[in-house]
Image (cartoon, rainbow, N blue to C red; front, side, top):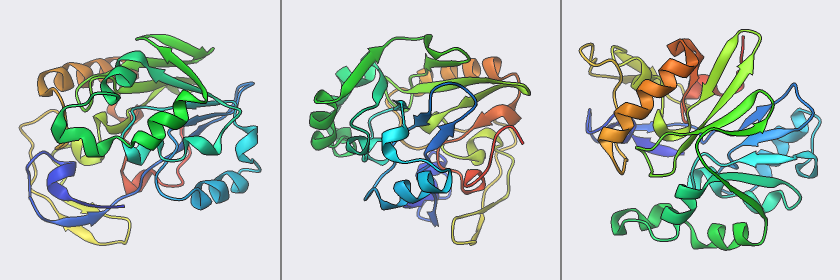
Length: 237
């Protein structure tokens, strides 16, 4: 997917184009097969990615939707037998978003989810032992992050609370996009974290980032939602 750097880093280096991924995560190691998010565009790429892991869409037990923006929920209909975990607050907001954000929510996705096994949850819901979702408002009112316990400590899939490692490490001076383009950045070393450009509440965003860091215990265990470095990577290393 294409973007501009001023969306990845709030109003910083505006109009610099970059290409980044819409990431879908597979959580392995337990009795259930769990996806985090459902991607954007046609389902072919997602079907191929599952096939590379020896899976078909019907094998997925649970899909955790971090939030209902189109680039995270476009392919929910690919998993008619799965349960979908979504924050109740996000569901309510998606049905009546701020006018400026209506285009981020696809009414067809809302309609599809109404026909699927949608489980509306609140902060701290345990999906399965070792996998928990937490409410982290800021990017959207009902954004959720996924806390996964591993042998190397807890990892947090942050969704769009943190788009990229530029948000986690604001001192970065260069960014490599999906096409291998080297994107020069204006470092922001005075910021602990730097917000993305789309949010409903920036004050809540800062509180949510502090919570995510506290739960992860380390920036290295926070996984952003759109960074090219994450593509194909297995956590923990």
